[in-house]
Image (cartoon, rainbow, N blue to C red; front, top):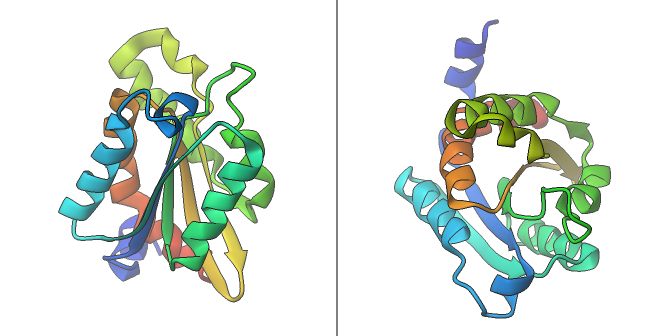
Length: 171
């Protein structure tokens, strides 16, 4: 069965959570434009928001927010921020070990599209995705950089493939 056939059999609607990882936004020192954009784009596509949270760049806060998303019934979680290379960028390190399966291709495709938009600076992104399974459920997790441009780039890929990921993640 090809990718288009799989997509045809994949869930068309899902419950989602957006988690923004940002020290400054969590302290109220800047507006979370990326997270709000992601919520709006996913809602406009007909998906149901079950959680929106802004947390600091701290491992336990990030993991805790993912647990909150799971408990809220999220099928898809999109994180925004903490994917760079500074010492405070710990989203990937916090979540990657929770993945039952990592979707390495998501980061590669994200960086390819980003390269077309911003050039070689795309190499600074460690965007990734994975499937977390627990209690008989599967949750797709997509980790994006925190810029508004990254949110716009990433949500297009996510909207096209999230149902496909869920279909296989649930098998």
